[in-house]
Image (cartoon, rainbow, N blue to C red; front, side, top):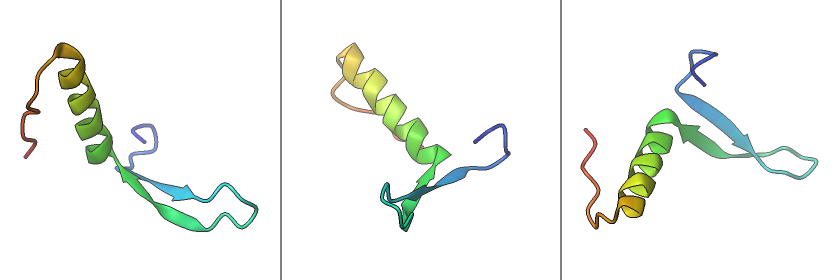
Length: 50
């Protein structure tokens, strides 16, 4: 995403139709990574992202 100066990616179905399944944003990836890091460190609460 950063190489192409985009903050989202289009997600398509895996079948031959390649229908739109949704979007994934850089922000959602960042939040998921923060949550996983917190989980692995044993924190029960994830800091809020503004």
